[in-house]
Length: 336
Ligand code: NAP
Image (cartoon, rainbow, N blue to C red; front, side, top):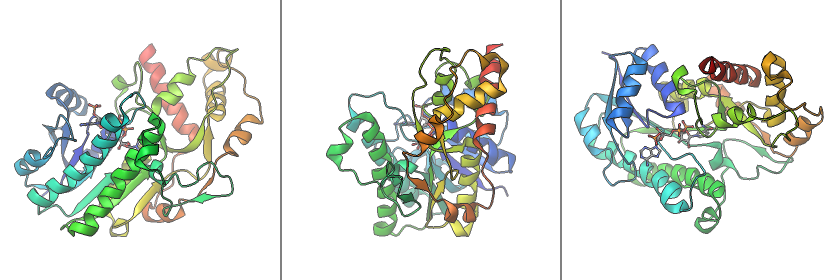
């Protein structure tokens, strides 16, 4: 009998890849989506009878996952990916903090109360929860790093709000396990900026999800524009999805925070350079990159040591060049 996996937020950028990989590996998948039209669209894209969906319109609502889990006693693995990831808010508590935290608690409470057969739970957190000293080049971040933000600091601006939403939500998951001693084992996946193609070409149009839009927005620069500086850790979405599968398939992942990042950082300069070198139509359209810019930009960030996590994951990450080329090629395909 095939194992059935529940994926919350199944329509998300990362979750669609998770669902696709689960189906490819023979799992049955129940995805939670916000509406029937979103569920139908995903089912149409997947073209698989191994996928079905349940509607969970708002993960923050008390008991949000109760009915879906009562209806599916066949679910033995739960992957909680749903969480707001955007900076478009003037009410940080309502739009970012509470859905992330309450959504996580609702998922875990529903599993404890209504799904005693669930053995493994994976929560998608973020490197945002590991932002202990990200701007210190002398610091090395690893699986033990934790963001230190107060509730008040979280409300200062949307970036702080998102970072804190992931930190408090992850903390709530660990606290739940410690205090409630549920019947399932918890693993956490902490991705850095996630790049790479959408699971379905049809989704690579218009404004993309927050992390993919970083590459998409660079394509709109003119030759005389300044490249907006940004740098950070990066990982390909196909690797993040794969990490979620390892996180529940491998016993070594139990009780772990899995930091999914390449060791080196990306910068917007490096991305522009890769695009100019690999897509003739952008060679003269995008601004030229000063050779020192990339090194200077990434020199402002801390070092990343994900070695413990890659030992658990047991595969090699996709590099920035492939991530960028595959992302841009997909966007261009839709323009033709
Ligand atoms: P995404 O495409 O925006 O996906 C987020 C998913 O969560 C969507 O399906 C969204 O549904 C759902 N969702 C959000 N708020 C909800 C609510 N209140 N009720 C019900 N569903 C809700 O973003 P993503 O990049 O795939 O992110 C997925 C997870 O990875 C998130 O937990 C995010 O924090 C984490 N993460 C992402 C990155 C990255 O760079 N992409 C890095 C680290 C961690 P709708 O689309 O219908 O609103």
